[in-house]
Length: 304
Image 1 (cartoon, rainbow, N blue to C red):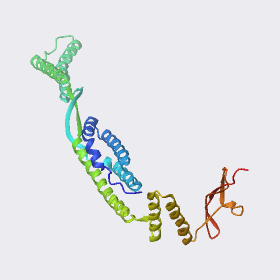
Image 2: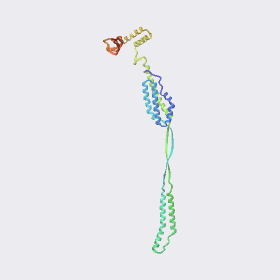
Image 3: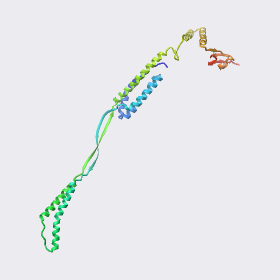
Image 4: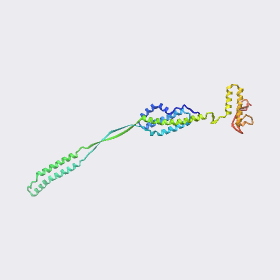
């Protein structure tokens, strides 16, 4: 296939869609969605590239290299601005019990007990003796009772201390994607693919030039050039007799290549495909080399 130098580069196709691509990436907001957008762009680039490229070698190379870019997309640095904020959660209350409250309760019980015991003892002694006993020390008793009462009040204050309220705060961290950074990384990857395709294209161009003047990679001989030149001259001359004369040279050329032209006869009928016709004869001779048929001829048996 001849080399085609009108192939559009991938970077040119990408730049044409730059604004749309940046808008789509920015609206994605998340890296995984941005990757899917780039994958779709790779598919678009390959399809558009193949429409202008006629070299199968370049098409295959482009497909392989763009597939490598697709596999590397998760490695593209997409991190942009990082935002950190805290949100308030439900408030919880924790009651706090002060151990001093229990100590003061115990102290109140002890003081009140010591204050009542002398009164109980004095009262029991008086009843058993049937007479008024010795009066207890009222000042001491009153002091103990008042001390017990004060301890009970302090204990109540300590135990009724309000619960401590705690607030739960949750920290959130969000990293947005940078559309410009993603596009630049993607663009660099496409540039690298284009550079490799340029090398393949240069090789294709060289191969195309080196194959000029050949037939199936074989150099054209001088006798072939003479034959083709004479046939073209006959075609341009407009002289039927001159054209027939030059056509006869084809038989001589084939003979030199050990290829014989065979006309139709009853003995050579196996070399021909038969076509209906009014006149029997050879329509196209068969080509035979060393007894082996190379190309069947066409003949007509005529009307009966």
